[in-house]
Length: 70
Length: 406
Ligand code: SF4
Image (cartoon, rainbow over all chains, first blue to last red; front, side):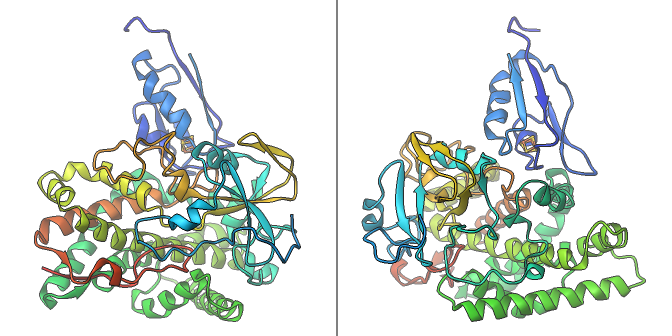
């Protein structure tokens, strides 16, 4: 781990509209399930070096379904 | 804000005739006040035009702004009849909340990136074949009819299980449906004919004993037979997908080609390095934003937008094209910049209605432009810019023709 603060990601599948923007932005962290195409997390506590891209994913999520706690 | 008929408010939609690359004329732009401009719609209704990137995103993501055309006072961009309840079934882009997500969720997995990756070979083949044919027929050509329109049309037909040989029929009708200058009667007739066509296609799939893999057949087998979806709803969903699937990408391919022909350096760079394509596609989407008349919404509660209170019952129009040229987000927004990181553009909309087909549209655009650049290094427009006809009155802007030679 680099020295950054740990980050925590939570997603709200009820809000998710399956746009996939998060999957494009941080494929290491986000995916979509095969049945409904809604967001799933590969890792809820990603390494801190992803923080910039995670913030971008939060910003680009059209449904406001991603929360980032830093 | 409804009911007024005499007014000196700007009339909206603006129909741009100045340049295919400017979202609106200088004169129309001069009528816009930041952040909200009151405008008058063809129905006589008034609405607020919202043009800043942050405000447009707020409106489109806020659950207090409804997309449901059936609500009283909903701001209509043209005077057309809404049709019966039956006609509106399945049209989930005009629904809110649970009603919307129930239908959309039957389709999200279909269009997600990893599934679109699987059909990239099909897109590539379709692009190759169309370009072979255009090349063999020899210069000159109309790039819209030889390439931009058939490629997405063939791909969506293949995915849905709609026979491509019927393309003349459904392309003519979807053109009318999107034309804001078409009469209410011709719009209603075109919609009815398309619905009847899709209904008989779906009914044939219901009767079929062969296991077909296309999307409409699977929805029939997995959703209609199980009672989760009615045939009327599936007809409405198929209508949306068929129109959105070929009109939007087709217009992006045609218009992007014309823009790239004005920027031969960008085209040469793409030819030399096809890995530039994904970034270029985002910038094309931002710069061209073909849904030029924006997205209408109705406030269902009082909501502050850009420091201004929009009251419950008032209409707003989220103007994607100007939001995508907001200098608070994009430096030198009027410039078309090859390697701009334009990911924040909202050409696909924003909020829960954001385009479900965006991975498909991106893949089609990328593959089409890379292959066109590679195979036609001497491609050039065969008419002066001013003589190339644009779809100025359509909900989806684009070119009706693009004469080219090589
Ligand atoms: S960006 Fe948001 S809406 Fe889109 S798939 Fe990810 S979580 Fe869902």
